Image 1 (tube, helix red, strand yellow):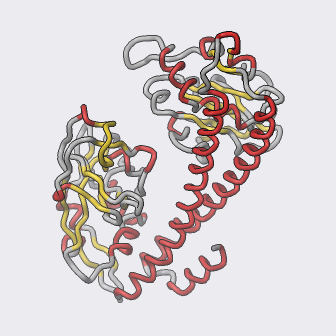
Image 2: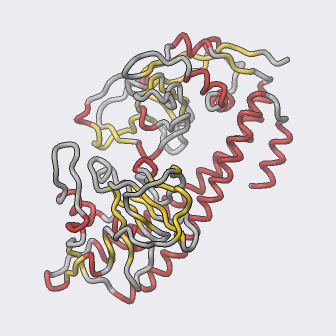
Length: 402
């Protein structure tokens, strides 16, 4: 029987330190704080912020390093003990006072295997029941060190890590394609339309080309109880892959081809914007009242609504037109409709629209594949870590889908 070993016998922890808030957003190095760790583990790229201050080696993490949250600001405890790994394209980052770097002190454990063990359900359950505190939850170092992991041979550990890494690499590659597609299309649409400098006589209103804040009329059969909460709207990329199931008598309705834009601070400033492409023909869904629906008018291609909504010109205008009390400012749909913009080159617009449709569809297919691979990884991981699934069987299953 494979032995179980205390984490404290395998690793040590190095906590980060507080930082100067005024330097956040300045050119520098990435901050590896709580926001960069997904609930229940994994790296959260869209929340990475740059920091213009120093980062001594002692409180830094390099590509491939594991870092952990030993606290949670909610009592759900989904972030308590959650681990992330610095991706290969971030060579250097700075820990904060809320995160700790995991340093190996034993050659009996493989780093990739250890990271997988920190994502496994039994570890996550262990962390949830050991949180202490009233406002925030904390996980003590002693409790973290006391968790035991199954420790097979190094050869088996590395084989398990390689199987899971193959899936992770493919998932990351698919997600990266969507980001690249969005970035390329955003830059072209901005330079060819939204950010052009033209005379007053060549300006039109946004409402001439887009329906903004469309009514919640009859948009077709409601898809069960699907509801898009603000937290499910992305801050980078355009795909929305998760939602909740609940009935809603209020809030905007939307269909495929619509774009959802946050209208409240700080979500608007954080660029929360998503393109709807997960519904079936004739279906509609509902969303938070703090979301505005933007829809391309004929003959514009549906993706133009997203590219319009994320353009710097439109976003700057929307932020300037927010009103309300501090911390609860919103922009009204009626103000967004009055956004002045250049008349488009109709020849370019037609050709670009066809390209954007094709590339958005390709991205959707890759996102669906990534979702399927994620489900597979989440199924294989606990079985491999617990030893109930042989590595060779997992390797065969992965080879069939990659």
